[in-house]
Structures are given as structure tokens and as C-alpha cells.
Amino acid sequence: MRVRAIVRTPLSLLGILMGLGVAASVRTVHITGTVANIQRWEIKGYYTAMVVAHTEPRRAGVVSTRPQLMVDKVTGRFEGEIICEVMRNKHGRWVDIHLINMAATFQVYSTMVIRAPYAERIDLGAFDWKPSHYRWKEGALVIDTAVPRDTVIGDLFGDHVRISPINPERGDSVRFEFVWNNSGQPHVASFGDPYLENESYVVCELTFAVRTDTDIYTESWDHRVVLYLRPDTEGRYRLRQVPAQGEHFRDIDFLLDKDLCFDVAERIEP
Image (cartoon, rainbow, N blue to C red):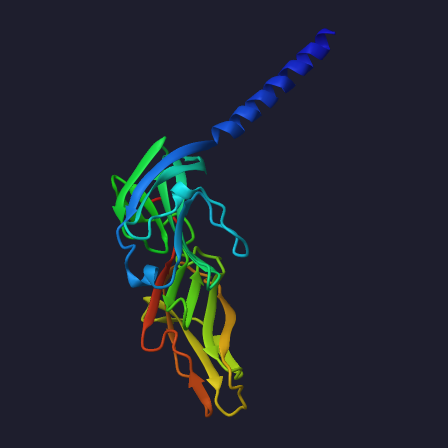
């Protein structure tokens, strides 16, 4: 009987401790703040609502949120409570706050993530909404270099490229999603082999064009192509688009006449 009691007690304690650990990782946080650029055309012209939440919604679905966590589309003010998972690391306890722009007509959204020190009440003050990852440190936003970040180049509702992540580590596969509008012409899209330039940059050249010698439809629609780039070494990278070689090609301007530079390095806490 004694042996059974000894075995049963540690198991019970383990269950209790596990339960406490799970409960301790989730907290209700009171959030306040003001989106200062709520009236900018990039927000007002495309999006019908902005939501404050702890995680992003699924791309195919409806966002479930409390009314007090909707951002006022006139003033940019928001206030209310959200349930957050509290993350712990050597720098302290943190919560992620997502400010999500919704466009019901286009079925798309764009997100700004703010990682803030955990507190029962968090006042973010006034700040500009930007679709990237930030940290709230000493009353200001700083770009978060510790997490993979996406970026969009071009018009989100026109020709554009989404890069995931823009801050890769060695061995990451960097995803480039190209979106353009045309009438069904065949396309050519590829990355060239990276090469070292002036012992300073690793250069990678992009070609992206459609053929002009084929029959097309009268209608046009969005097309999407995904390419991957895998940096094998750390350092400074330069991506540039070069014109397609040969006749009967029309370049789609994603990065023509401009360089995209990014670093391949370890992601660290800012």
C-alpha cells in the first residue's frame, strides 16, 4: 500500500504542475493605442476594417473578434481585452499583438505584429501601422530582427512580389511570390546562379517576362508564380531583375532598375 501511495503522489503532483504551467502561459491583457495613419489611402482606400488580436486569422475564413477590439476607422483608437499566450525567454516575458487589416471585397488581409513586454495593461500610444514585425521597447517601435519577416514590393492590389522571409538565415529557403495581371500569355521566370561581385555582394539575377507572340484572351486576371532562393552562405545579397533575352518578350516590372539588398545572418533579439 505504501508503494502505491508513493507512486500515485508524484503523478498527481505532475498533473497539477502541468495544469498550472498551461494556465500560466495564457493571460488576458488590456490593450489601448491609436493607429496614427488610419486615414492614409493605403489603409482607407483598400481595407474595410482593422482588427486587434493575438494571432492572425486563417486566410479562408471569418475573423472572430470582440467589438471593442475593432480599430475606429476615423480616429484610429482601439481599447479592449484580448487573450494572449505569454512567451518567455532570457529577455523576459512577451506577448504578440496583431493589427490586421481586412478587405472583405478582395478576401485579403495584411498584418502588423508588435511584440510587447507582458503586462496586465499595455498602452501602445500612437504609432503608424506598417505591415511588418516590430518590438515595443522603451516606449517606441523597433524592427524585430529576431523573427522571420515578410515584405511586399509593389502594389498589393496590382503587380507585386511578396518575399518570405526578407531576413533569412543561412539555409533558409526564401520564397518569392510574384503576382501580375495579364490575359494568359506564357511566361518565363527564373533566378540565375548567384555569383560574388567585388568580394562584397552575392548577386542573383531575376528574369521575369511574358511572351508577346501568342494568342491572348480579351479578359485578364491575376497570375501567381512562386520561386525559391536558397542562400548557402552568410553575407550581403543583392537581387536584381534583368531584361529577358530574345525576341517576343515583354518584361513584367517587379525589380527593373532597382536593387533589392538583404542580409543573410543569424536572427537576434534587438
